[in-house]
Amino acid sequence: MITNATLKTITVLSVLFLFVNCKEKPKAEVAIRPVKFSEVTYLGGDKARSFSGTARTEKIINLSFRNSGIVTTLDMKLGQKVKKDQLLAQLDNVQSRLSYESAIESKNSAESQMNTAKLNLNRVRKLYEKGSASLSDYEAAKNSYRTATASFESAKRSVAIQQEQIRFGYLYAPQDGVIANVYAEIDENVSPGQVIGVLNAGTAIEIALGLPESVINAVKKGMKVKVSFTALEGEIFNAEVTEVAPALDPNTSTYPVRVTVLDSDERIKSGMAANVNFEFVDNTQTKKSLVIPASGVGEDGQGRFVFLIEGADGNYHVKKQQIAIGELTPEGFEVTKGLSIGQKIATAGLQTLLDGQQVKLN
Image 1: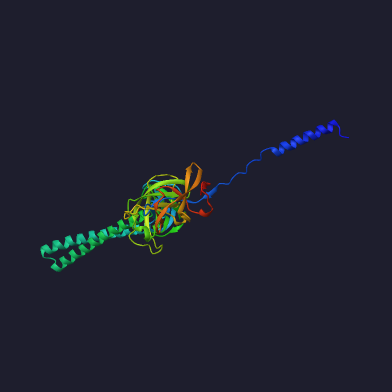
Image 2: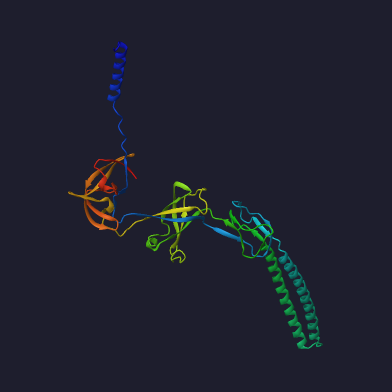
């Protein structure tokens, strides 16, 4: 026998069941398809090419002694800022000082011999004038004096040279700059010309890179370019071409080019990897024909078509657009009707796109 309480319970459960089943189910989120795209451009218009290079200061000086010896003083540290004529390093100069002292002794001896020869010449001259000495004695005295004088002058030059050799044992900063590398230590024996440090003396930053023969004739000194650095992601710097080599580098099979960064920034360090973007313009192209990639052109029963990408601010959709095409060029199909400069078109997956379909740019 069903009681009133049981009937009420059954009624409440039935109502709840109907409410749950009648409740509107949430709509499944539709995935927005990403599409690759390209812009409609002019045939033979601006062409951007990017080449990699390495940053460096405009002037790098290898520091070395012009003499040999043991390093007794070394005032160079990585990143140290130095001023012109600042003492950076010094050698013991033992050999140079010994040579200098020997040169002084030789000069004094030569000077003494010259004075003796002069006194002898004066004595022989007086005797010759009185007829007590022969002409040959007088000429021999003059020759002895000339020889002694020449020896003295040579000894004086030797003293100056040896004094210069002592100065070669002191290394001074040739310009203001920053120490980039140090290759020597205190008490190390170094030889003439051995690099013991590197000074970055320039204030501007250069990019050294190599360009292939296919573009080198389009690059001119003073040409404006854009530079980006891997270490400074998302930032673009203005730069200018300052050097263009007229000959091929046989080691890299490219033409060396130097680019100077016009925007100074202390974050740009020597040795950073850089990308230099060149904009090449074909001035010989007189016909302004529109061109699109061949991969962006489809065909149906009505003829050739493209999918235009319309919209803005991340809200894009595609629109099927019939077009008329001309010749196939290395840059793609010429477009004679149906498109205008700057429009965006899809360049992949045309067979699966639908007119009006929502997309996102890839």
